[in-house]
Image (cartoon, rainbow, N blue to C red; front, side, top):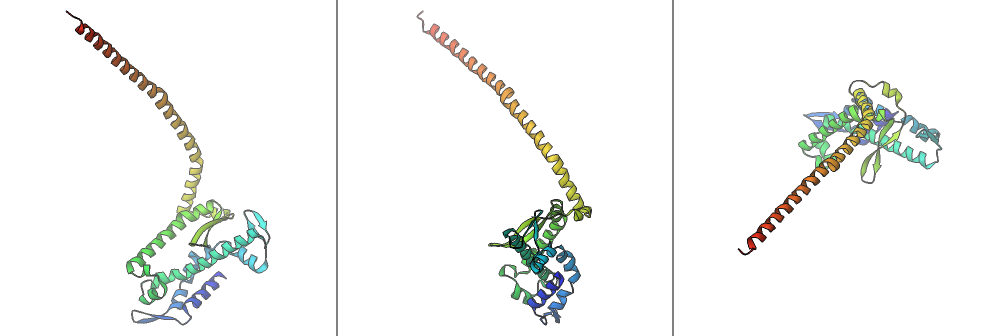
Length: 253
């Protein structure tokens, strides 16, 4: 169903019979983009969370489960949750429309004039933008997504007053957790190790810090105090000797 929505979005956005000239060839934009169905399905559409729950809520008016509690259809909590899921669905489908466009037609002048902002007109800025997206995809797949699975939550994109924002909702993901392997699995193991070691390490550092403070205030502080007292006493003794010497010098012979 999501794939059908994505296909309709491409046709409606670009036009079913839209063409573009690239290297003396007329290319059908819709046909080119729909040729990436499997990649977009695997990388984007299949990863859209809680679509079945949203579909059931909108079509059959079923309750929504939020933080392990069921909320009626008309409740503010259910409406807010459904709105976030719907906004995330729209943003991810739009992402699936733009991704193959950037992969195949990113630097075509006609595409840049019709769909890009002024800040992405130059080839350098386009390549920088694509590299940033590639890096963010890797960061998401290898670190952020395993972390979200381990923390039993889904990350959602929502529409905010200043643009697109990121939020998260709770959902059990134990089945996904047991299927992790390679780098994602290592990330979860590191998180678990950090959770096990961090409190003990903080306690150890607190004790060590208290010991350092004690040494500085008690031992070193007292030592400096004794040294200062000795210096003052030495200065006082020298002053007394000088006074006696001056008195003896001032006596008439």
